[in-house]
Image (tube, one colour):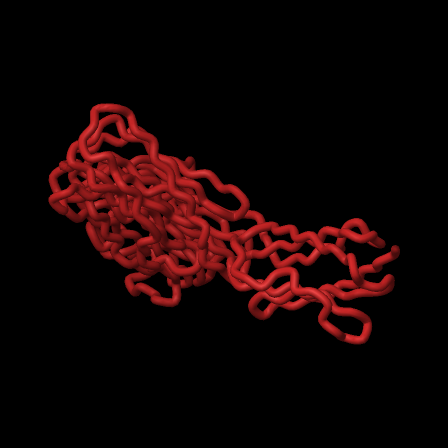
Amino acid sequence: MKNYLILFLIFISFISLAYSGLFEQDLLGGTQLNGNGCVCHTTEQDTTVSVWIEGPDTLLAGETGIYRMYLANGPAEAGGHNVAGRFGIMSLVDTLSVWDSRSPNELTQAFPLVFPTPQDTIYWEFAYTVPDSVVVDTLYSCGLSLVYDHIPDLLDRWNFGPKFPITVVENIVPVEMISFTSAVSNNQVLLNWITASELNNSGFQVERRITNDDKNDLWVIIGFVNGNGTTTETKNYSYMDENLPAGKQNLYEGKYQYRLKQIDFDGSSQYSKTIEVEFISKINFVLEQNYPNPFNPKTAIKYRLPFAGNVILKVYDVLGNEVAVLVNEYKSIGEHKVDFNAVGLSSGIYFYYLKSGDFTEIKKMTYLK
């Protein structure tokens, strides 16, 4: 009986420690930068656990960027994280993370974040300020996918995330930019920026990348806006991105990032901050019913395109004879309208046919004199 009592007391002590937060000190030093992973749970990393960081990969010297550390797979009941920077300063953004003076360049979780379902991805936000004395800085991450019993054991799984390099750009080109903003209009992105002064400014190379499908997407040059050479006056610039690449199912939904590469006449250059635009509305092909219908002798036909391309819009009679070609040309993204005048045609039923890419649709209309 005495032996059972001793074993029971040992078990209760272990459970109390597990829930007391005394293990919290082992949560520090979990990244490849300053530790060996979440070894208080298991010493072996599991590559089936997915861990990665998303955020701006280019910052001006001393600039602060907002980042997210993602975690997926594994037991996926709850998760913890460690994220650390080599040279810069970590800062708290959400209430799910904590900073500890014992490891000032690292953040970790304040308490496990619960997965909504095992198929979901969870994330923690944080801020990182790069120094002004290096060319490349690096972020390190480690994610722990655990069985939510509050007890570190071999059922929990962790993995390191890929190292996330950040290019630190010195502000050496004498162009003072006041602001760089974006606005979404009819599935197009309008970029605006203002400079307070310029010296030998050739212009701005506009670059874009998509972040919702592949976190390793490369920057793409989409345009160039001429600068004003040398001036001490405030100058306003804008660029309209009208040719967004279609995402999944030809829907413009997801995140697009933009940055400017300011280029001097002697070839010197610097990057602006990165800004992000998110499309949350879904736009698909639409061919509307003509209005008015019935009509005499004019009617209007509207259609909407999710991406730019060649459009064919024709009118046929009930025998299948082509009676009019209303559109046969390249059209931009968005809504379009075309008028149809049936003067010279007989009263009756007609069909109008729209084709753009793989999309086709036919609708009926009635002409009454």
